Image (cartoon, rainbow over all chains, first blue to last red; front, side):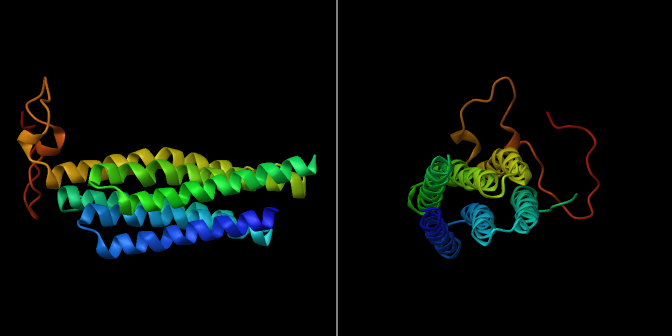
Length: 89
Length: 131
């Protein structure tokens, strides 16, 4: 039962990643693209945790943690660049 | 006992999958940028939270030990998601909304996103605040 639920969640988050890619390519502005990239990072974290759940190993939590931190920093850097035209003044 | 854990893990996984899908679909479907901000920041955080809770329950049920890595990731995401949303909303206000379209910002003169000077490379940073 858990196995099929994991497959279902895999399908949902993968479809979500494809939708984010669509939004990145066809969005109307820069802010939407940054938002889609942020959502992509969050979906990727969910996929990594699901993969660790399926493989039965705890090795992927560190990867998920690092991706979460890098995603936050990159989104803040993008937003800062949109706001000020520079990242570190 | 084991069947209860199985049902709980399955329910959390399905809920999180649906939430993640809805968040990403709302990002495409919603009409204007401010409401597009709403969909992923709430729904996807709930989605990832569901996956992490399912993973914690799985660690308790299968390996018989409490795993606390997931709480770290959940805590980090719960802290950073509003900050990210606030930054993107601020950038959107700064780029696309004119000064007179915003409501009155009493007691200040204007909103903070319009109270900044454009950055110029090599210019001296001004020490006095513009009021």
